[in-house]
Picture 1 (cartoon, rainbow, N blue to C red):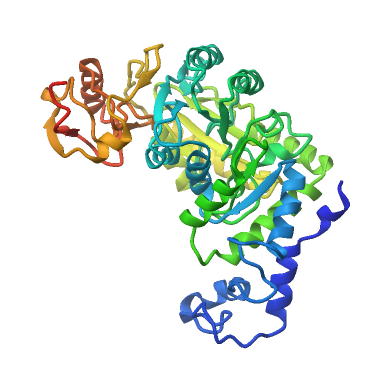
Picture 2 (picture 1 turned 180 degrees about the horizontal axis):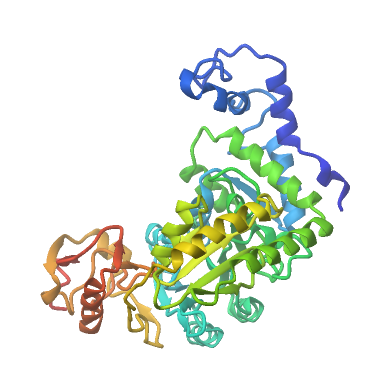
Length: 477
Ligand SMILES: Cc1ncc(COP(=O)(O)O)c(C=O)c1O
């Protein structure tokens, strides 16, 4: 363990400030937690004492030179990056920033279609030209996973002019793919590798079996500290790993996109999350793995689901059998006060913490009640044809700049084939855009969407039951 990894410079400075009983004639209006709605005061008070502003000695996130710079440096040392930035608007702002910083308008970018919406938004803001790589379908797991390594490599070979390739590693379920080969190939043609590692902050632990993208040589890696490590919601890191990344542009876009009053509790929790990781031991980890194994055994119910282990040992998926639906199973869990992370049409995803926090006996008791209720449930099987059967990559019919200059109009599905979409159509599950904004709509896709309506599959952000917004001037092209 590196000696100074036992320090928490930002937490220490903020705590020392709060303990000195300061008299506040500055923002925020809660005056160090002395002024607050009575109902919530008891819960909020201790945290509010840390919720301060950029006073002398407490540094400034947007121009760090003191304790925030020190805390970021310790994080950079722990994550082995060239530079680590603290983020107070989640991986969302990290993803926007990495794209804006590394790409110029008009640059070609390779991106997997099943990416988080912040990646789509980042590409739109940056005005790049995306080439979408189709996700592959894992028949055994019955869900979409990353594009196949061969299709990623093919795209990198076909499009050596691409400025960046943007990939999600791991996926929501904690599964990964051979990223190193992809990074090495991309770097041969000077293509940036930008990784959304929102779910992989704990991969920095040397004894976790999955390597982090930074370790494998990616250029920029964004991690939500709050997802898989103990940190407050919205706290995240952006790590720069190679000198090819323009640091000044990263810095510029972060101060453009993030609040000018960054939350100290969030920043402190990033300092403490790094400290937690750096001082977490292999013994603790092994104990956690034993606990997870025991929990997995409690969940075994072959009449109702398969318990799947994922590449990330902290994730567990129940693959629900056809005679049940995942939402029915979720409802039974919630009745017993058990809250999973995510459900799809046939999966329920559970995320563990880095330490065992809930006693096994408590879980076993509740699972016994759930098993009793399961006996009475039946469900009609839903069959959905594959959504993304095409092997080829897809580019947009209009650039984001052209889209900005076009008027839109609403169009019935019956007339939509051949027009250019002015909005994304995202069935949920699986949460992957079936139509991307700016993509030319295919007749086969319209037929698929109608099939999904009949199966009552939901759409995000809203249900486009009758039609879609399209670009007016682009019609007939
Ligand atoms: C793959 C992925 N990337 C990015 C994000 C956004 O992360 P955050 O909530 O930290 O902004 C999420 C959120 O669920 C995600 O699943």
